[in-house]
Image (tube, rainbow, N blue to C red; front, side, top):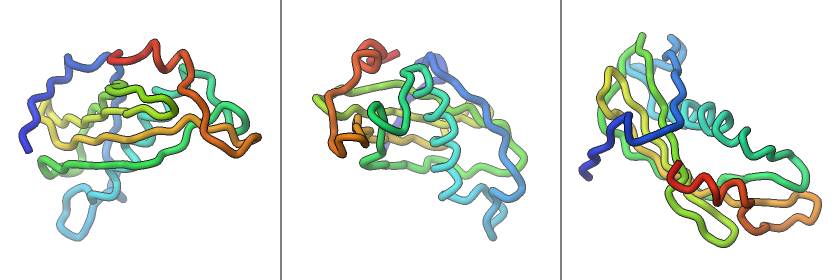
Amino acid sequence: MKHNYKIQDFKFKHIIKTRYRDLDSFNHINNATFLSYFEDARILFFNRWNVNKNDRSLIVASINIDYIKQVEHPSDLIVCQKISRIGTKSFDNHSVIFCNDELVCVSKTIIVCYNFVLNKSVQVYDEIKQDLNL
């Protein structure tokens, strides 16, 4: 799969430094660690919408990751994100990771708006709709 993303394509950026504990037995960053990098950036991105753990929450329904290039430690990574699709009760969070200006990983996360008090999914919040392609 060919990806032609550039850092400039994204307004939201978060810098993460790799950690020694992120290494696997092949001496590069373990594939599973990228989930944590995406999660760290996603939480900061989502804070703008005043979500909570009760009646105005978000849950991850699906994550798809394409690994493009290996990453070595130590490295400074830039995680970029934007909302790429909005449905009735869910939306797609599109994320990419760059290392030294090179694309190393691409992810699409499907997020569902959820009310834990009512124990059901709810309509996508207006603030999220306003951030489409931000």
